[in-house]
Amino acid sequence: MVKRIKTKLDVIEGMLYYWQATSEREKVGETYLNSLANQPEMNYIYDDEFNRESVRRALSAISNREIFHSENKKERIFWNNNMWMMEDLDYTKTMVAPLKTLNLDLLVEKLNSKSIDSHIEELEVIFIPGHADEYKITDDKLIINFFRVKPDLYEDDKVTIGDKPIIDYIEEKLNELIK
Image 1 (cartoon, helix red, strand yellow):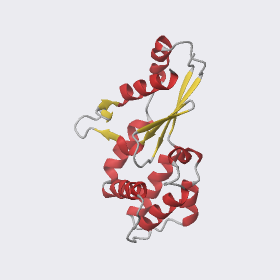
Image 2: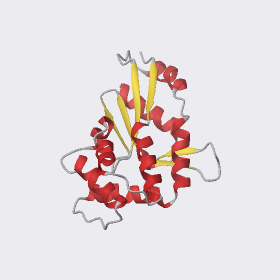
Image 3: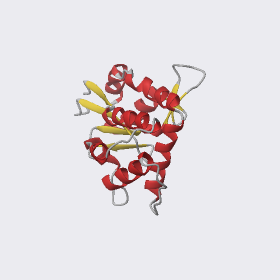
């Protein structure tokens, strides 16, 4: 029986500082970039093609205003998504704001009413700056690509992922997780 759904934004908070500082032409040091790449939550997007060094290289190129060359499609997507975040920081902040106030408590009862004797007591919804996948389910965690969060520019409370309201999207994916 699910008792709690925890939302984790640690990596996004760190990236928000990076995007802000870099857009203001401040130099973000390699130590900070490595600390972002080494965040445990980032492991969920790492594979044989995309790893800590991929993150460091892409973010370092942006911070140093260098041209980024890579044969790796995932690295290019990651670089491009991060460049996009810095183009309009107000929009980026509009993406982050609803996640900071996201209350998933109402989903606990809904999930429990649909689940078949789930042994899972705590679920985690983790937002990370991904590359290709919209979401990933690992263990008791729903990993969501932050770059897929789409706030509506005309309706303040309307936020979607994949053309679904964010709460509905998360509920659907958590149902998938507990089955």
